[in-house]
Each structure stands twice: as C-alpha cells, then as structure tokens.
Length: 76
Length: 536
Image (tube, rainbow over all chains, first blue to last red; front, side):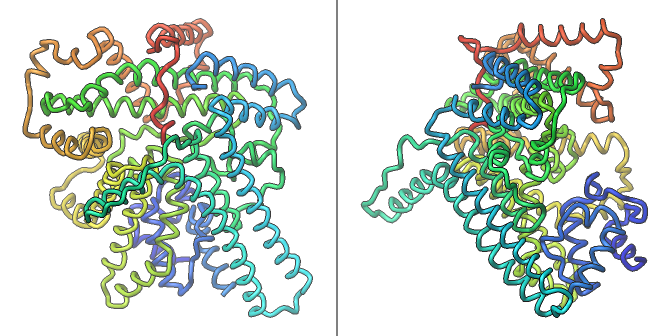
C-alpha cells in the first residue's frame, strides 16, 4: 500500500491519496491522470489493467486501486 | 412538438397526471406510450428507425448476456476440479463470442447513423475528388434523406449500452418495453442528455410515488430552462444571424467579436436551457437525468471546459473512445517503447497528446457532417494536446514567476483566456465558411472599431435586436450570471428558495412565469424557434 501511495503521489503530488474517497466521482482525478496511473501501475506491478477494470469504483480511492491490483494479480 | 410549446406543457401535464394515478407497476407503460406518442409528432416514417435500433440493441444485449450466463453455469457445474488454464481458456472463448456480437450490433447502429447523417457529405467529397482529377463522373447526392429525431443521441445511448453489456458492467435488460423506453424516453430524445443504461434503466423499474417537492423542483427547473431559451437565447439570435451571414464582410472586427459573445450566450442558453427543460420534465416524473452542464464558461482550461460542457457526450467519449484507445495494444506498445529507452516524458506525453485528436475529431463530426466541424474538433484537440504536452513547462513558468494560482485575479485571467480561446472555435463553426471564419478571427485583432463600443451611435442596434430587446437580453444575462456565481459558490438555488416565506416564494414564481410570458420570444403562431442541438 505504501508503494502504491508513493506511485500516486509522483503522479499528482497535490492530492492526499490516503484520505480521498471519491477521486473519480468528485472529479479530483481527470482522465489523463487516470491513464497515467493505469500505465504506471501496469509497469510497477507488472499487470495488465484492461478496459473492463476502468470503472469509477476501482479508482475512487487508493484502497480501491490496491484491491483491484491484488485481484488482477490473483487472476493472472 | 417543441419542448417550449404550449402543446408540450399540456402533453406533459396529462402524462404526469396519468403516471401518478395508474398502478405503480404500469408507470413504465405510461412513459413508453407517452414517448412514442411524442415521437410520432415528428413523423411516422421516423419511428421505423428508432424501433430498428431498439430491436437490434435489445436482442444483441440479450444474446451477449445468454453467452455470459452459459459460461458461468458451465463453470459452476465443473466445480473445483477445473484448472486455472481451463478457466482462462473458457473465459477467452466466451469473451470472443461476446465481442463478435458486440461489434456486429455496434456496427449496425453506426451504419444507420452514417447513412442518414454522413452519406451526402461523403458523396460531396467524392465529387470534389473526381472534379479535382477531371474525371467526368458525378454522383447525385440523395435527396429527401430523413434524419430521424434524436438519432445521434439515441444511437450513442444504444452503443454505450452494448459496450457496457459486453464489458459485463451490468446485466442486459430482459423487459423489451422498459428497454424501448430507455432508448425513446421523451424528455431526453430531442437533444439529450446522453443517458447511460446503468443510471436510467433501473429507474423505470422503480415505483414512483407522487412527491410535491420533486414535482415542484422539476417545474422550477423547466421554468429556468424556458427563461434561458425564450428570454435570452431566442432574443439574441438575430444578432448571430446578421453578423455571421453571407454579407459578413461589411462588419469590423469589433462587430465580429460582439457576434462571438452573442453566439456564446445563445448556444449556452439554447442548449443548457433545453437540457433544463428535459431534466425538469423528467424530475416531475421522479426520474433523474444526468447533469449536462456545470457552468462551463467558468472553466479555467479548455480540457476543463469539455468536462463541464455537454458533460454526457464528454463522458461517452471518455468511456468508449478515450480509454479504449489509450489502453489499446498499439498505444501501450508505443508507450513501452519510449519507456524502455528511458524516455519517460515521451512515454507519458505521446499517447496523451495523440488520443485527443481521435476524440475531438469524433466530437466534431458528431455535431455535423462538414469540414468546419472537423476543423472545430482539430482546433480543440490541438489546444488540449498542447496543454498536456507543455504542462511541465507551464508548471515551471508558474514557479519561476511565483504566480499564486489560488488568487482570484489569476483564476479570472484563466477563465477569460479559456473563454476567448473557445470563442475562436465558436466562430469556426458559426461563420459562413472557412474563409469567412479566418477573416473574422483576423479582423478581431486588426480591425478594431472603437466607435462601435463607445460612440453609442446605434450601430449595435442595427444587427437585428433593438435597444429595448438588447436591454432585456442584458438584464437576462446578468440574472443568469448572478445565479451561476451563486451556484458556483455552492448555493443550491431551489433548496434556498424553498426555505423562504410563502409570499416571497410565490412572488418569485409568478414573476418568473410573467417574465417568460411577456419577454419570451415567440414566433407568429406562438411557437418558439427550434433548439440548435436538435439538428445534431
């Protein structure tokens, strides 16, 4: 989780990823941020985030992203 | 039947009445009959198109769901003995079947849209190419093509549904009537919002009890929409007709600038007013339609503007074009190629700056089949891509000049800058041709006519709107601006109004109705002009 927060902070240092719970729903992250996150997570965790995973629920908070990463790793 | 006509209000009153007196389980049926009755007003031959789209989309959705359910049942029957590899192979097989059904049904929908909206545009361009190479061939454009009401909107909604079902976002609708209602729901059929099944579909299965506050809020929203459309948009319309006419050359750059301002006011009030009427009418039926505007002219960048203007089209493009392109194999490979060479900046920037061209090209031609709309799309794409690519440079400049980005003055500067940059794209689509558009933009900088602004010699009133009407329009815009600033600062206007004393509240309602009746712009038979987005 700490590694994830570090990655996210590198992309948007102005956001407190530990606290935010509605990153997508409240428009904190825009689509360019999300694509950057997807690309970064794909590299760092060696996973393929598919279009089917691109839901607001998966990106609304750092925990949600962490759960998504864990799920994809288990499925692979 | 226009949303601004008395006929529509009578129609809506009857629908609302029937909707709340029938047994709750038949409410969807009232809405379906109402939606098709509304649609029939636009012509019986058009109904065939929407029924065709509905049937194809419904059946494809059911078929995809059947394949997915069969896969899940099979997996369950196999029990725990199935290996991970077998499971993956089964998943791959079912996904490929689903994707084929999805692709075929999406293509059918796109084909119909292309035939009615873009065929003649294609023929015109082919003829130009033949002419260029001196071929003695000319294809006659098709005459009397029917462009069914709302086809761009309901086709996009249907495609969105097919993609969502294919992705397994939700289960396909099994009830044909309720699905047909989703495609044809009368408040949003003319000009959106572009609804998503996941948000709207389930509301048709819920029971809606009569709730005075909800119905009242719906009516207020409609009233606000009518104010924007009839009092402001239709009042300033003649200015735009005059300035952007074929005789445009007689005007100075300052007049073009004024025309651009008037057009910005008109298009926002026309479209967002129409959406308010649609959302208000739906709210009277207890149905929530998504927001389509969030005070877009307060945006501080073009990218932000596109998140606040025609929100549902932007969201559609993001879900079904932007993300799929960004996550597609060629784009991710390109990104990896740069990254493997240590060019992190390029790995990030190249896909982010190329994809907006695809998105905005589509947004451009969605609005209409013409090269002016293509140019409009490309212009926006260039701005968004450049700002993404140069973001680190801007960040450094802001740090270097120690600019306080939280200061009001800086925000205001960004708002005005964005508005003007977008003003150019508005001229691009509204001017009578490319040459005119370029001439107009150039003149704004080179042909400044201070007399037009300061002499008050009346030239401003010769553009089709007299002094009294200009005054009403100005007051209308000031009211709109005040309300928008209050909303921007978090005030919920209707809720705040509901807390006031009854006399004050009713005084406001009656004044609002009187203003619309007295100052609304009506044609000779009391029918307002049609909505601009109705044609898209």
